[in-house]
Amino acid sequence: MLHRRLAELEKKGKPIRVGLIGAGRMGLGVLHQITRTKGMRIAAVADCQASRAAEAAQSNLSSRGAVLATDNLAEATRVVESGGAVATSDSRMVCRLPLDVVIEATGIPDSGAQVALEAIEQKKHIVTLNVEADAVIGPILSHLANRAGVVYTVTAGDEPGVLGGMYEWAVSIGLQVVVAGKGCMRPIDWNANPDSVAAEAKRLGINPKMLASFRDGSKHNVEVCVVANGTGLVPDVRGTHARPLALDEIPRVLCPKKDGGILDQSGVVEIAPPVLDAEGRPDMARSVTPGVYLVVTTDHPQIHADFKYLLVGDGPYYLLHRPFHLCAMETPNSIARAAIYGDATLNAPGGPVAEVIAIAKRDLKPGEILTGSGGAEITGQIEKHAICRKENLLPLGLAYGVKLKRAVPKGTPLVLDDVALDESLAIQKLWRLQQKTFPI
Image 1: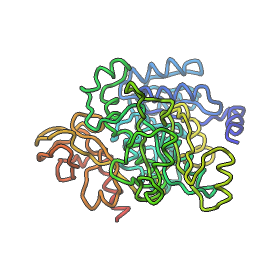
Image 2: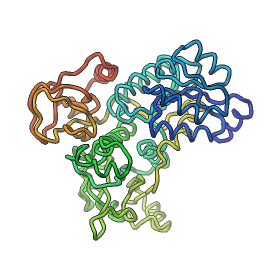
Image 3: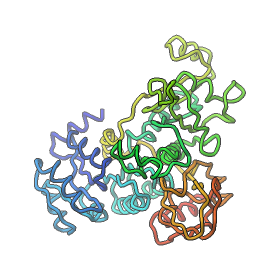
Image 4: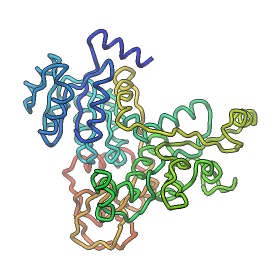
């Protein structure tokens, strides 16, 4: 069992050595949990703000040995080899240290691309919390990692990793997965922007653009896109149905039309915004959030009878609901699976199945700069990859800091020719390589 293997590593004094890129909220969550996990240790922390990396390392790692702030590879290597820890602003240097696993936790698409590629080239396992990058180039990163003999994976704890685990469990015992879906904490407003959510963001103490990326549906679409590419499930419609449903409604509504549901096909990803109470507030007791779910079925009458006997439901479709996900707290599980078993929590086994495309939130003018997920200009919606290729649609993850070349009306999907892409970016190069490696 995994915890026993970790205990053995701890006892032998040979813990899994981990480098952390990104010391924001998610990165710190990973750091805090690893310091309480046997058999692994954080040996390096990197952040674009050197002071933030140093503060994170000193506050959490100094009791376990020396902590040195440095961007010098030779110095950093000596510290790591002696059992200490390094704080740095150089993420590439972290990938070159004597480590076993690199964690990418910046949430910035191009940063995720750079770190993952460097880690793979340095023969390090890479565990990413950066679903923004994975939704764009996860398939090619998984392909390159396989060729290099290392693991590339998204993390356990975030909804894609949790859903991937549930899907694997269900299909491995012979169940048919009709839907894999995730909840939302708040209703979706496809036109939400940092200004419209500013008051709520201030009250919650979070970045307005980050909050807007959830409220406008972009983040949710990115996460189910990661699930689609890792499982082969597809969106039933562009952006998913995103219909507010109570838990008991899900298996009756999210099933094929021939059985009274709304789906044109079986085997899809979905988003479930919360239902509202009588006062118009999210009713969390009746909604999926903060969990994830599967809708499953079977073709055997005895298994249907067993589902009913076990009080799962009357069928023919059944809801399997995990009522929580613990985000960064579950990352050590992915680290251990990669380092000990060479196993991924969730990654793409082949070419892309889906992409998240950029759609104008308002009328856009030539010369405007797109700011990506949660910005004022565009939202993101999942679409089948074949349609994206056919229609030349612009991936959301490539729409960060790019300039519009022509006007785009509100509600219109952007195409590649609408923008001036920066071909020098790592994420752009990897996306081009992915298109070439996995032709339609």
